[in-house]
Length: 330
Image (cartoon, rainbow, N blue to C red; front, side, top):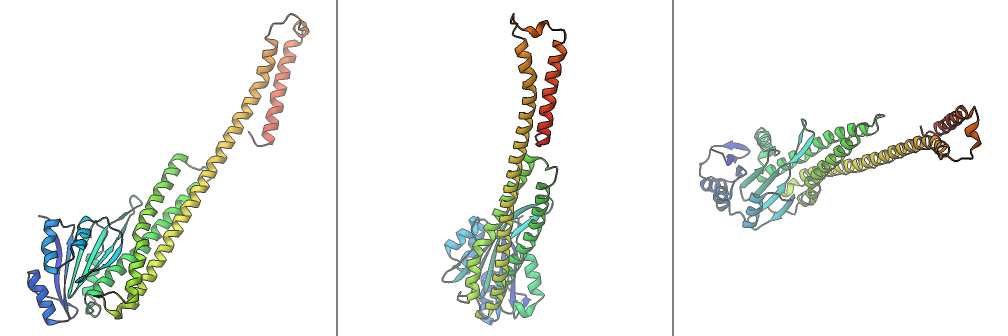
């Protein structure tokens, strides 16, 4: 049977504690004793599966709808009883050199955190283990969870950007290689990389505004003393966005260079074809003249007519060959 609730735990004073199995009882206990909160993690729940959690934590219906449908842009929304944050983790697949994105929704409220994961790119298990190993950080409650998740997602953006940079440098080297490779295959690789970078940008660019709001310290349900930490995440996100912009510009330059090379190669091919056609046209013209069978053509009666005409055609063709060779058409 599929596990919808991947993990659910009560945290007291920065440490994982044993609490009631019922979500309502566990939340009531966290609110009653103070310095405690409940963290529930879900993976791709259906509407029926999520209804119970949404009811227990009084989550806003619009936020619940977004969390279930997925395919959301990164954003931050404030409701009466909770804060709703959407993140798009990015996963780099080294086997195929592809970028894929998941979705991660975080609900923050009074003494609770609810995370909803779609896809495989969200680093929630690692974040939870890291926080549980750092009770002094986890002691700051739901704000610490939101910061740790945001920090892990954004830091991974930088790692993925570095991997893509290596791939694009290899692609650039192939484009400017003397052999040039297969033009059609190169163009396909460039456009595929362009789509990967576009998918990456859709994850990083819209997240800038939510991170700025968190760094400003004006968002409810977030500890105001966490401003420096969210500013650090925002700075890392700016770096990631700059790298994505750089990758996009590099791809545009590589594509322009590839198209220019294709144009040059086509011009070279046309010059070669024209040169060979010109060399073939001279003997064809001479042969055509002497093939008209006119009665009054004195050269036809001359003993040396044939070798003279052949020599004339050969000399003309050789002269054209030298001319085209000197001009780089051959």
